[in-house]
Image 1 (tube, rainbow, N blue to C red):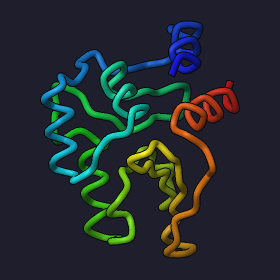
Image 2 (cartoon, rainbow, N blue to C red):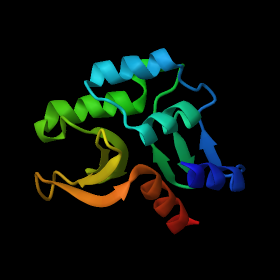
Image 3 (cartoon, rainbow, N blue to C red):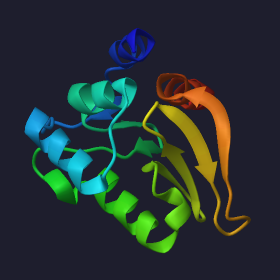
Image 4 (spheres, helix red, strand yellow):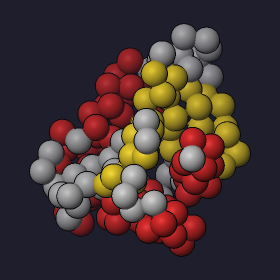
Length: 139
């Protein structure tokens, strides 16, 4: 996640992250509620940033103030209730128009567009690469 750290530092005036970083017990609680083991990259992302936003893109996250009411937890639980196929993923981005970016326990990134199909499609990217690719695309 060194490339992400570098990008955040180089764009510190535009990149936003949580001022209420989640404590380890908050991350563990979210993991338990979601029945999901956060991968190394997602765990780093949560501990280091809580969430990230840059320009008009905001990634879901967890923060100490909202704890289990944070968007990553709430949106993932809502998706799991509606679409059982998402059970082994967390919702990382709501791209709008019913398009979701999901992450699995190994930090692999997927796209899920339930209005088009009930399939989850691999983007063949790890979490850090996905974040950087999207941030660089809108830079």
